[in-house]
Image (cartoon, rainbow, N blue to C red; front, side, top):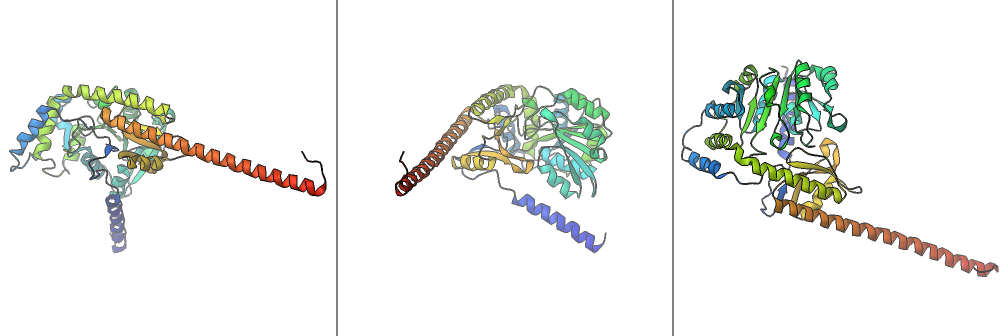
Length: 399
């Protein structure tokens, strides 16, 4: 590589890292915020899971397993797979990064359904690769033809999330299978929110060698801060990822909590039911307040704000009331906010804030209308007075 080309690469990487470091923090220091912007699950871990974390602290002086074998075997047993079909990661974000490193090089391309998870743009840039953003079809249908026969056919892999982030929409598993069966490429399917959805593509992992499924315990299992994620796929694909994975990539607490969650998955069912119930309650309430809400199968809602304002304005107004929501102008969703579904008190606080802002906006709008009407009447009166004065001067009959 020439010195000039090396300098261009280094300059590009520096810019990417600068952009990553400039991203605003989603973790405010003020504990008074109601945090509904990063799709975390605010419920406490089950007692048994908490106890496993505490017990792991007693082994903090030891290195964790360098191959995550205990966690991989527990996941394999829980999801009816073999351990060589499982990779465990420090959150699914680590696994996404490994996928880009393993399958992409400078000049390569990856196809992603858009709007989608924005972090993929940064990962593609870091590899010097191009991200081909393919728009979802009408009513969020999977654009299979565009993925199979358009520019995306040259991509090293296809990436999509189901349910999708940030829309929350869900693609029938039959459509996912059609794409995987017809594609020559690796299909990476992110199922971060699948526990809030009606179905999963997990059963396809044993049927297709070109399907790689991602899962995380950050959303539905309330362990975002502990960082536990999984990839399920063909042993050759999993082996390729594990070959470039850092040793000791997960700590002893992550191991212990991951194994314990897998052993107590059923205890989360009530948690998931609550989130689905609150999701529908908030959807109905927002619709009544003039928002257009996309039907969701995740633990969040994407809501188009009422006409006259954009998502950034609503974000700022809600933040002043100590409510944090996500805005997505980079995804072409300038007129939307994304709202995580939390506890009932959290959602009550959010809805109360929205009602206050909506009411204030209505009063402000009525005030502007009244002021405009008054100004028009004033102009009309002045015009009439001038006309009456002119009539007197000209001797015309007065009306």
